[in-house]
Length: 111
Image 1 (tube, rainbow, N blue to C red):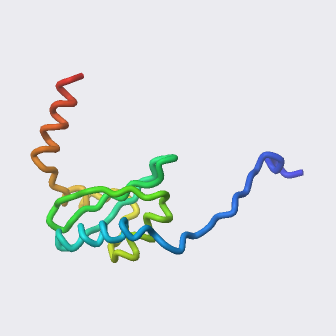
Image 2: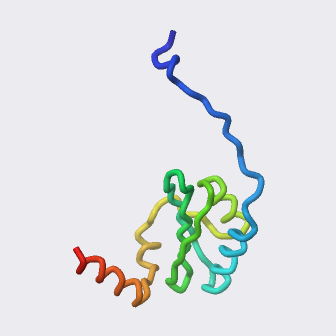
Image 3: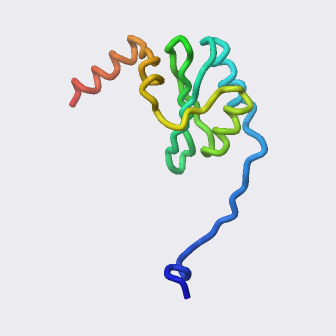
């Protein structure tokens, strides 16, 4: 018997064939309103996946999907490129709003 064979579980992996229309249209809408966009997909446990969209103008937003596979499919259908990691150039492109800076300052001051 091979090491670990009695505890190894295999699950059938299914590839999603469709993404929720609302998710795809939200991604398309963001990209259209900001001169194009790139996405970074982050796994967030049982909740699924967070899609962080960064517009060409520096604006950013996020969407949530049921899983990383659904998130990748939604981005593909919306025509938005998915970055594998947070590259320096992508982070430099992001421009947080003044409201975000204020909310981060309040959280720091409250500690």
